[in-house]
Length: 348
Image (cartoon, rainbow, N blue to C red):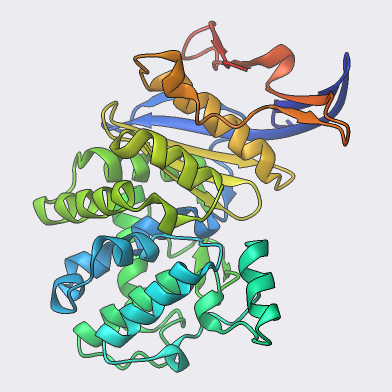
């Protein structure tokens, strides 16, 4: 059975495009609060789990050993835009561990931020691995290796001590075994494991609430959340959804995008974890769904507190409204009958 339509793009009174997908919302006890579509189908979480992959940075003592600041901890959780501060911060992390960019095994690409890319080109420069959107995560991996007296060379390999440690953490956070899971190579060369949305949502409920976690792990998760709340720009970049949302909401929400229409979030005050997958890989749809879910579950004292919400209306070249995005058929997401036969109304 096909996943339901989560987002429709309309032009005038016609639906121009539609995005199918699935979503899971789980509470701190692991109970399903909301589900749409097939939440047990395994999907690759991609970069949405970077905060979970950053937990060893705290747990091994690497962050304290190298004196990593909140900006550096936030960058370890990031898919950044390659802006100057991002690249400089990744370089700082490596320097503190006694290493340099030659140790990075994430590859090189131009910054996704157009101004940053044009700036490099205008200076006659080419990007380095520091501009890779995953350089913060990889710098964190190198710090973990060095702090635990492990040679960082080959740290992206599935059998490297750093990746074995991360696999164990993912299993513990999600409450599943990954030994039989489909495995592939992520875009930045590290292993990625296919997992159900329900397990991803469970992991982020635990990440946000600390429920069922050891005291040390709960403290590590809290420290990463606090770092991201203090430096939301570092997690994404100028104008990016994650940065805008967390700049506005602070510690109320942790959100993280992943490639191919994946999105995860933790809502600490509500003890909820959220995982979204748009079947066509559409990032615009995943953002729309995530925005609607946050608005549904997080309390806002005033309407102005919702000003971070991206406008669902696109405008033509002369400024008139040309199309509109909405969540679900008629602007509505529906609860699964087993939860309640009530509608979950998006605020768009």
